[in-house]
Image (cartoon, rainbow, N blue to C red; front, side, top):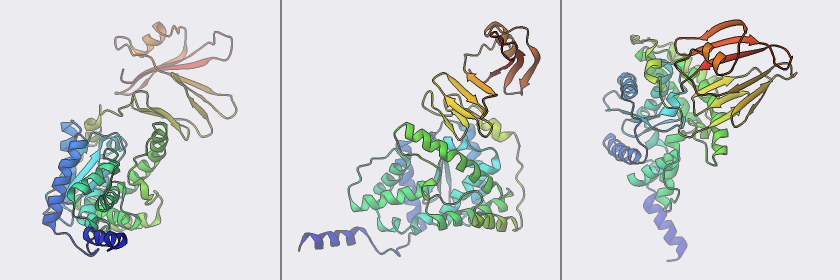
Length: 384
């Protein structure tokens, strides 16, 4: 027997018939083993209120799904990457990095409903490559590698197949299955009383973050981790996506959940934004500060430069300029007192307080010491 024949026999040994289907019992067993493997590599985000909140919303959606009898587990992972994924048997994972880019409970429900639909439609077992390996350990390795924490040294044919399957789970199953997950997820949302249109809104928000994630990844010398971005499944204005969401909205709605409009903000307030100190970037005229967890959008056409301690911005004609820098806040002083004492600004005109209940600030116009046009200065307290 020559080497080529031996290789063929080995391939046949690890790649069973592609039509093989997985029982629910097997799905659950695989999901549980993968759950232990994933949590051994990526810690759970220690935020009890958020974990309970996600579980409550996810459980409601799961009860209104096409597999309500399945026991679902919802886990928030302590990862800054903007991602969510599901594994066989009812296990749904949500990175804290993705939660920080959502704006409401309905958007959170949209992400969870999409991932639940991957489970109800058995996308993992339907994915041809997953049906070609029975090694739970290899499949878990594939998922971890796709997340970015697993080993890159995948040697065997079975492990290569598992790595590909893991990539599909974490980064998407391709356009058709992703659209199917959107369609079924939108139905689950309608049954649970959520507006399915939130699915379109959340995709728009996540697409806007994708370019920032890619820029940051390049700066850090790694591959970007974006929500199902590897397949570029569909933009916000995708006609097929609009159609499946609209079709779900035509279904009889379920009882609307008692949503506390401020609960999402209360639960997510104070979440840590990132792990790397000084993570900052300018993408398409928008400044992102990962360390402090804020972003500033500048008008179209402005040139924005991010320096070590200062952000400089200027309009196309050079008639308007803005300089933004960070100082340590002094809570014992009001922003107005900070401007007078720490910045030595006095005698301002058009002075007023700015901000809201969460952000305190002060602004006024001051004469230019060099004799130029008056300049407006603002002080905003944000965190430390």
